[in-house]
Length: 428
Image 1: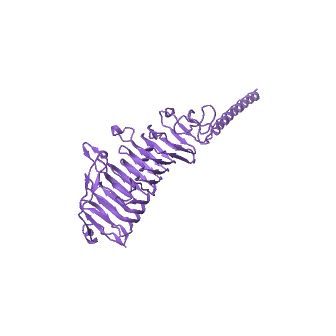
Image 2: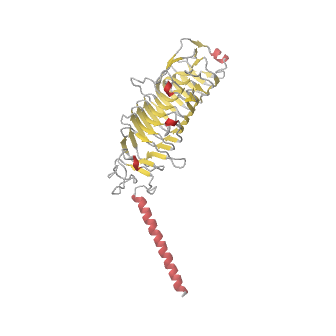
Image 3: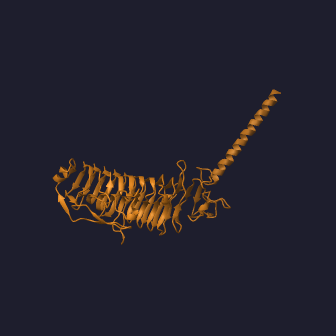
């Protein structure tokens, strides 16, 4: 009797094990069938596959490969966005050349700190997004958004614009990450960060063939790190370009460990801390116009082959240019007042400059106030400093024009040192 009971228990256990193995087999087979060994189908992950047979914007978009019926990827970026859920989602693009919709690709939705909205490529497949001559190729209006691993090109104004989902209320967007992208051939800027945006990370991107700015910042709390910006181009309307510009009330911006090369930047230099804007772009708080830049810092960057200068401070408060390597520029630094504030509390230290074509080391408008300007190394045939009267400005809604004063004079290095500047700097 006891032996029969044991046999029954053995049979039941064996049947249970067989059932578990069958369930595991079919579950694993389902994952293999969808063509993605890394994840099970999710109702918040969507695929676009231009070159996939059966891809169609009438599909549900939930599969990277076509499965029959409406089970397959979207065909292009014109799919109906109503199919996207209200919760955070990912859009993964498979290999292809995608033109944006007629008004650009616009992401209004927001994620949260646990789940970001993501726009990326699928695995390591190469994706090109063509702005197709639209003003802006991609516009990010939401919070908690990641854009990564894409090539974006051919916009009329900006390849990428970052602003706020609540711009009219001046509530700043937050936590946007732009990384590992290639952005090029924009008529104006590679990346535009508007004044309503904050807590932005722009990292490990390559940006080139821009007419104006590689990265143009109006926002706050922004980190721009380890990007490669190069080969600005000139047009009939824009004859100067810059890797980085922070203006219009920008605050707390760190530009670090970037490479900037091959530009024509004679007026403002390759990097501008602060700047000049039309009056309608001024940042106003409680009726007061804010400085163009506050706490803008450029640290540990490499700047080379610039037909113009390394850096300008224009109406920048508590701003810094330190530990940078500057190679083959035609002038060094400008310290300039703006239409509303003087540049003050400036730090310039521990930089290595090679200045060519007998360019000046620094032009200093006399109202400028320094916290520290010292410990720099200069390789230059011309040890020239220029003191200047304060600039004047002709202000307009769209453009504010700088009018340089005529009262400029070259001063000796001893006079500079007597002002407590460059006392420990080295010249060779």
